[in-house]
Amino acid sequence: MIRINLLPHRELKRKARQQQFTILAGMTCALGLFIIWGMYEYIDKEIEYQRGRNQYLQNQIAILDKQIEEIKRIKEQKQELIARKGVVEALQLDRSKVVHVLDEVARLMPDGVYLKSLKQTEQHIHLSGYAQSNAWVSTLMRSLDASPSFESPLLIEIKAATINNSRSNEFDLNVRLSESPNNLTESHLN
Image (cartoon, rainbow, N blue to C red):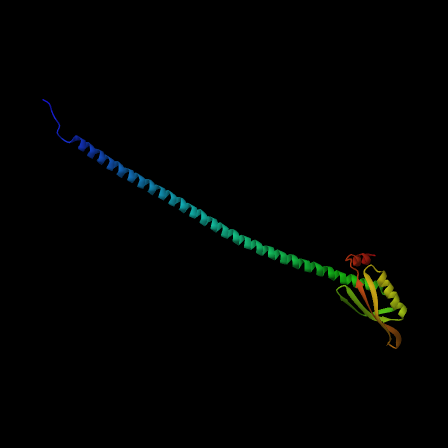
């Protein structure tokens, strides 16, 4: 006997295909959502990792900024100490220069001349004192002019004076120290 299928097989196939399409579409959507979620998580972890790196770098920059400030402070202290050292060295040089000036003046002083005062202002020296005659003052000025330590002796005033019932001359003169700092030591050694 012949069997005839009267069921609507085309409609059943269409429903089966539609059901298959719906399942595939749902699975595709689910797979797409899973991929999107996976990408989101990956990007979120990368962003968090980068934030951590940025925070580390900012911490290191802050540490380096503190070190730079410390270095600047140390450099400023170093400059201050160098300046102080320069002042101390200048004072040491001036201290020995005063001794050399006094020694040189004493060495150049003729027998008939006596100093009352000696004042130094920077490179200028003011001498005042008594001489037995004008010739002794002239001898002192020539000695000062010939000395490598001094230059340009200038007589300010000379006047007659009586000291201990003896006649003498009171004088004031200025002289400049030579520009070369080694002149005092060189002339002192001679």
